[in-house]
Length: 224
Ligand SMILES: [Fe+2]
Ligand SMILES: [Fe+2]
Image (cartoon, rainbow, N blue to C red):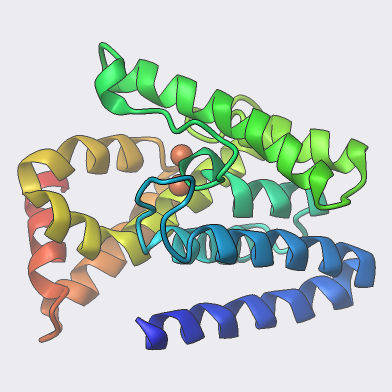
């Protein structure tokens, strides 16, 4: 775990240096503030509920993927990518539970809407400019289905982060039957170019002799 966290911290410091160079110190300080709050909220239980240990990694790697596919991303877009799933761990949010919805689509629609609301409140409470906070929240509110160009970019980065970083742990926790629906949803919304990236990641990792190989083998069998 400590290795994972230090890996995430290295990644976020690299990203912050990049943001500082490209957008200036204020932009970097706002991304840093959201990262610090997220790290705190995901370090253990939040508001009496269990927070999955991979939430922080997922936030960091979604921002990392966003900057790979869109190096000129605006500050609003970066904050949206980092905080896109915030309702799952912010202590002031009431988490959306899949069991309360008739199907996966309506669960995801409510999840993205709630993420927009929670992100807006959280960014403003961190002292981030209100116009920027509202713009970031609007993007996050479309991250599952891609309502416009910006939310589609976060959606792509979210799926890439899921397959490149979260998939093995998700598969180990849920098994292929329960993971398949999520994997299909996350894969189908990718662009043709990004589907190719996921197939390449999958092919490379299923051939390696590491613990993640079976998870990527199962993914390849069920998706491609
Ligand atoms: Fe999400
Ligand atoms: Fe996500």
